[in-house]
Image (tube, rainbow, N blue to C red):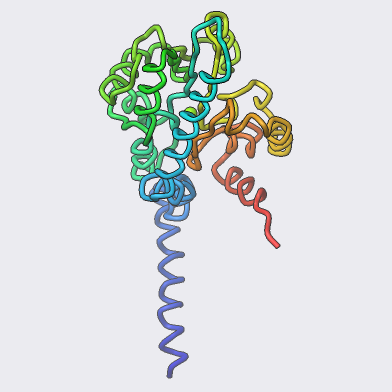
Length: 272
Ligand SMILES: [Mg+2]
């Protein structure tokens, strides 16, 4: 009796899944399983970004450390050139997680709705970013925003940064992606006129070209080799939602299927 009552819902559920899957296929609509596979894997990272006090604490930690390093630089180094702080924009000074959250609802992936989000100029500041950069400018440093947003997105981004209270939010301080996504030449351009004190970003490529297009183990090796720079000249912001760390898992080929991506993510798991 007990067994029967347990089995019956299982059989009914199995039948409904088979029939549901068949009818979804028949009607041309994606099945619930396919629905889930597109975005489900990003949910926890986005919730952490938006709801974890630990995320905010890490951001403050990064910007507090940046302030210490900047003060230290002014104390210990004489600089013939004006000092510069270079920051990335996305997930370094601006929080785009509402765009990522919207993609969950839409069951879509980047770049869907990205231009609309940038044009809306509504991104909030990352905790601690406005205060630190305002402090840096008050000390006589210049801020350069080196971002892989497209050059035709400068105006909307300047509007967003200014509305969020960022200093030096003008087009001249924005070095956006024109032809190449690598940021080295843009960093060198800043170095011609400035002494670069700090680089801040959520992606290793925000710090040095040596990380570009590297696989996971080579990224590890470069991070280990440059370990002294982290917390000194390089200040890292947390981003578990996306980044080249994810691209490295896919061999930087984002065109592979969702199933292949899922397999590569799970293939990267180390268990015991
Ligand atoms: Mg970024």
